[in-house]
Amino acid sequence: MTASPQRRQRRTITAIALAVLLVAVASALFTVGVVTLSNSEEGAAVEADERPRVALPVTPNAALAVVDGDGLLASVVVMTLLPDGLGGSVVTVPVSSDTTAGFGDERVPLSDVFDPADPDGFRSSLEAVLTLTIERVEIVDVDEFGDLIAPIESVEVVLPEDVIDSSALGSGIVAQAGPQSLRRSLVAESMVAVNTDGASYDHHDVDVALWTALASTAPVVVPPPPVPVDDLGQPVPPETFDAFVSQLWNGEVSVRDLAVYEPTPAENPTDADTVVIDRADAVLVFAQVSPALMSTPNPGLTVRLEVPFTDEQLAAGAEFETSSELARSLVAELLFFQANVVSVDTMPAPEGASTVTEVDVAEERFLADTEDAAPVLYGPSTVEVASTVIEGVDVVVRLGTGYLDRETVGPSGDDPEGLDTDGLDPDGDPGTTDPAPSVPGDAGPDGSSPAGGTTTDTVDEDA
Image 1 (cartoon, rainbow, N blue to C red):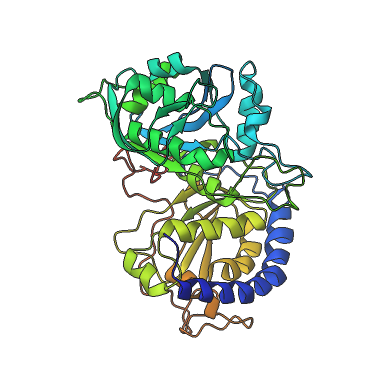
Image 2: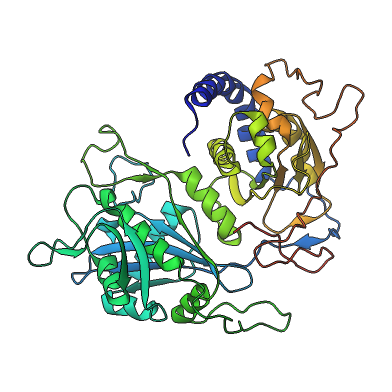
């Protein structure tokens, strides 16, 4: 949902004032200090680290490319399983996504570099666009796609426009706009239809509607067949793509679309038929559904972001309507300062967020610079060395309500609510709300919670 005009105006004014402070202070502290420190081994402890260690959840993913009879790219999605191996998410990717991610002299759409005979090349392009490691790729035609959705006889769908296949004879209409029931063969034909009329992204909503309709049929088998497990009782990743899709359809499935923007003429001098995926939005989505497979291309620290606000707390802040909107804004800032956001949790805590943002660093050598940068980036903050280490995560940021009011903190660092920028009240006591644990223990999609200890466990994600 789009923010109200009052919120947009306030946020614009806030952003201008905050940008000056962020660039002047955080760039020096975070980019130069913390980023440099992340690549240094100086001061690293030599004794064995006996703290409990946990792991990000194992959520296998796979990319699916659907092609028409001429081998043209018609649809792209990234599928991810939930930790328990059943159900998961489908993220739709525009076939015209710019493979340069907005960098370089020219925009190059995914459909232009796609070669059905080169799945590894397609995988590399897609990984660069999404900042994600993709475990497997499958390229299918209309018949093979029909086989993949074989358990589904028909779907109820509302098509936003006529589905047109420009290579077909006559009108080329495969299915008409509006609400209808499509049998499986027509779903497959609609999925491979390529409409060359207008910009490619103009027809992306049809793609989203079809995948949403397919997801609404899941689970297709009740009760679902059992998922193979290993000696530790953990789900075994599917060995084949068919098995992967079968496990996906036999649990709850959500569909997510990625935010994009159209490049300006100056950014797109060749007028390529392309859109640029909003990197912050892509990171937000995949850091929720596939955190263990997030790429870390930036030189900075790896960050897990927790946004535990209740709806009431968000409303009181008057800036963001949803936790996802807030998280995407902060992810964009962290990417600007060359951090790597690998995990995001937007589930509200039972008691809501604390007053103060709590920052846990994995190593003591990150402490000093993080203490300097945290108040600028997150508002009133406390920074400590983590009591439990999350594999692959340097910093865990658990936002407090002070983050919602950080625009009221002036360059002097004074906080009108009586909290200094170190997150303590004038008497040196932390805020009144009890801090959340360093590793979240609330149940994730599979109903499990991390158990701590020295054995490797998983951190729950709101996939």
